[in-house]
Length: 401
Image (cartoon, rainbow, N blue to C red; front, side):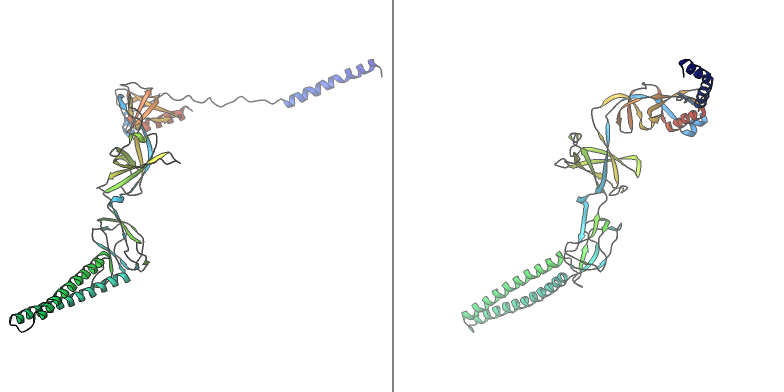
């Protein structure tokens, strides 16, 4: 085929090729519908509350004030029994528990019998005292007889009825009887002390376990009928009028803590109340794993509201005091991921307009926050009911959306 005939053939087929290409292009093109979604609503800058809404939400405001605040850090702590006011009632000898007369939570007095124990040592101590007492009576009688014999011999010597040698022999017998009596008295004292050391009941020979401290029973580690070894703890009694607060303080903060320093802490049982403790002792070394120093403080607890093993949050001052605008903790709210305050503009009819104000916090004190940017002294800041104002901001965003 000549070049001219090839060009003619291609030219005759071109319309078909063009049509096919146009059809394919039309099938491949998709229509993209325009978005019908509304743009995200901008954060609401202010809301209005009526007098009724303000009263219902408990919303209150006050002028921002300038004060000096020392930054604080919160550390986990734990309340423990005061070991200086805790006793462990234990068995002084091996034996079988006959009865336990107190249970966990019971109040006991100093000297009160809380358990009884049957023991061979108790029975032996009772028998030894009885034997020593009997021997003491025998030696006392022997001394009386020797004294009488000596006096009779001296009378007979005066009548020249016996010799001087007989009188000397009577006097020697009296001295020997007196020595034996003294030895018997010492034996009775030893047996009595042994009986008292074991707290043995002289009538039964049972060992009586007594609490040497008045308080409450904190723990019970045995049951009646159990065989226990010497030194085994039966009950733990503590005086709850004083507790220990233990807290691990980072070594960078421990420099400002000394025996006698005050600590403040809270517990979840009384979240609105702050308790005080007085530092008693600091550990002599730093824990190499946590880089903390264990601090122990005494906690007065005469009302017995606090209990051992409660978890505590200890607030410890750190850094230097700083001066700035101070607001209550509850005034600061988190809105759209940022810390804000609400500035009130009363309308004169009991209602108010509230404007959100983003702030920068620098320090946290005792129930207070220090603001370094975002609010000025004298501005009316919502101090109570800030959560109700925050909720109104949230509803406003939903309505706009």
